[in-house]
Image 1 (tube, rainbow, N blue to C red):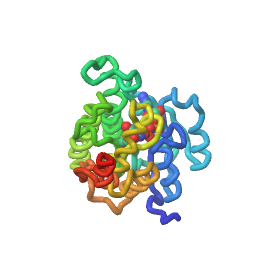
Image 2 (image 1 turned 180 degrees about the vertical axis):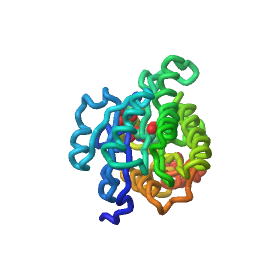
Image 3 (image 1 turned 90 degrees about the vertical axis):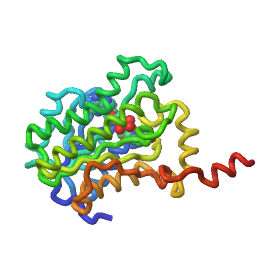
Image 4 (image 1 turned 120 degrees about the vertical axis):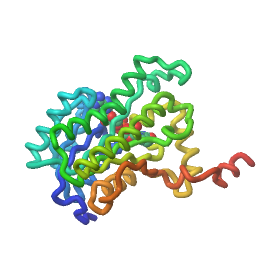
Length: 270
Ligand SMILES: NC(=O)c1ccc[n+]([C@@H]2O[C@H](COP(=O)([O-])OP(=O)(O)OC[C@H]3O[C@@H](n4cnc5c(N)ncnc54)[C@H](O)[C@@H]3O)[C@@H](O)[C@H]2O)c1
């Protein structure tokens, strides 16, 4: 049901790879809520062609951009503003990739070239997207920028290896850039810390299915789905959350505040 929460707002949504992607659901919900937006992803991800279906369904233009390349990001904002007819009101950063995770390299033996790549793609890209927007004055006052993160930024999760450190950096960029952008332009910046979710990025982690079940048992409300996450992002893009900025917001069914659930104990006592 549409309540036009984002009516008249213009956005940029990164990271929709296929229908499981969290960004895919955000795009569907943003469309339902009356927003117009541009979809973007790395040129290499376009080869799958899935994103064209989403663009058709949401009447959106696709502008390819590698989020590690500043000139690509400059072009993304410039073309988006031209196409959408004005400055941007919301941006979703939904980009994550670790070569160390993909190659199953343990945390104590990280390959530093891969580590650098992971930092560039998954955290520094966020700074680049914010810095370019700031330089071009591409985001309207009270605009909202959201990036997706994971609780391994605050607690140790062995399987998340270098992405734990990278997400900590992402969350710090949200706070620090949020300060500067908020002071100067009233632009707000937050991270949403999402439950484990079955997507291409999530599924690439060793032991993901087992951990997904663990988190499901640990969370009073169960794991938050990609669709739930999209709803939360939409609320953050809307004016209803106008005074929320520089926060890392847990979206995890209560997981992060639970010491141990009875369901975990019951499983151990069997
Ligand atoms: N799936 C989970 O369990 C989970 C949990 C918490 C947070 N997150 C975060 O959510 C975000 C979205 O991931 P997802 O789970 O929807 O998986 P996904 O694989 O569908 O999305 C990741 C996206 O990053 C894009 N990308 C990779 N390199 C890029 C580059 N150089 N330039 C531009 N785009 C690039 C990919 O093409 C893909 O679309 C990520 O930041 C991820 O870390 C995921």
